[in-house]
Each structure stands twice: as structure tokens, then as C-alpha cells.
Length: 175
Image (cartoon, rainbow, N blue to C red; front, top):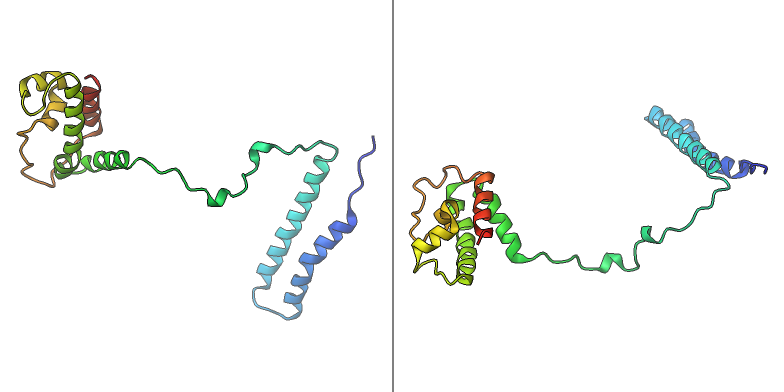
């Protein structure tokens, strides 16, 4: 099997296309001639790399992979909307890692709502049966969900750490 010949005519055309602008820059003595020469060398390197790639892949069957094509109209498709409540909960957790204010006013309402729902499945009211709710929730989840939780004295004091939030979530999941 004889290797295919180098397409010299096409290579010469490509070299001419990148050389003509260089000659114009040199003849007109445009500033930044050094930059023009460097760009010309990069273009010649790209042509050479294309030629080498073509030679390396010569004779190999190249199939069209259907998974790599973008479906028609991909730019018009709406991105799937995230669940708004989930986004709010994510933001509440992120902010609660910062300040006590955010723990009390952003994260706590979510924890109370989830705890009330999970306790309600067991027939326990968060507000009317606090002792039973505290026993079921665990100390860390109860501290955030309890109805008589006071506002923070210093709003800018440190919020919760991620391990504490994880334990609260585990307490809610345990229900």
C-alpha cells in the first residue's frame, strides 16, 4: 500500500495566504514588524502541524460519532429551571456559615418548616409538644427549631460551622 502524496499545491496556497500580509507589513515598514514575523511563524507552524496530522491520519477511517454533535436548535432550548425552594435553602445554608443573624433569620425558618413537617408525620406538634419534639429532633436540631429561641445578641457574631449544619440535617433526617 503506497502512502498518499503530500498535497503541495494546497500547502503552497496556505503559505501564500499567510506570507502576503507579512510582505505587505515589511514593504510598508509598519511598526511592530517583529510581531508580524512571529505571527507568520506561528501560522507556518499551524500549517505544518495540520500537514503532519493529515499524514498521520491518512488511510484511517474516520466515523461520525453521533454523540458529539449538538442537536439542531440547541441554542434555543431553555435551561432546566432549578427548584426555587432548593436555591433558597442553599443560600440560607451558605449565609448561615457567616453570621448568627443569618442563622436565625435565614436558616432557622427552613429548619422549623422541615422539622414541623417531619414531626407532623409522627403526630407531634413542634409548638404544642416541645418536650416530645425536642426528644425526637435531638439537641442541635432542636436548638434551631425551638419556638422560644432568642434572637442573637450580636448579629455579626460567627455563624454555624459546616459540621454543625450537617448534624442538624442528620437530626432532621433521623425522623
